[in-house]
Image 1 (tube, rainbow, N blue to C red):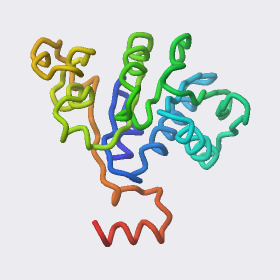
Image 2: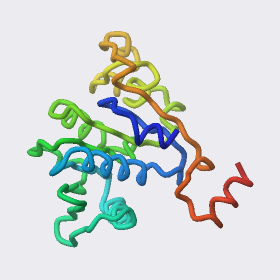
Image 3: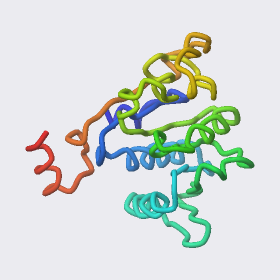
Length: 194
């Protein structure tokens, strides 16, 4: 399913996958594909915190991007991807926005801003949101409703939300064992456990 997510042309796809399932790499490869198809494209890669920004920068390097130490800008061909925390989405009008670990606190407001300004918003999250019942990702991908602040605070508000077109918001599910990017030694160990 990871490859289908990367290849999807839907404007708002979501990759719902387990820990170490390759979510960050999938978003990066999706950005790389977009830049290959749209010369000079500029994107924003939203991460929930500084630790995730460091991990994302390393992952971008691993996929052939050059990452500047100042400003955390990842360059590939004629394209650029800015690695930013959720509170710095305002002010950008990029060609695409990728939200990594979208289930983390603070990512909902980043999603709302990105969604209002962009036609291409991709996200990746762990499946734990389905256990909570009241989560914006559950409203969007499970219940096919456009989330707002009220539904995050009150599940009863879910019925009042507008429907979303499943063709625009496809969800792709993968487990850690499905990750084609795991090192062979680690991948074999995880597949034996799964």
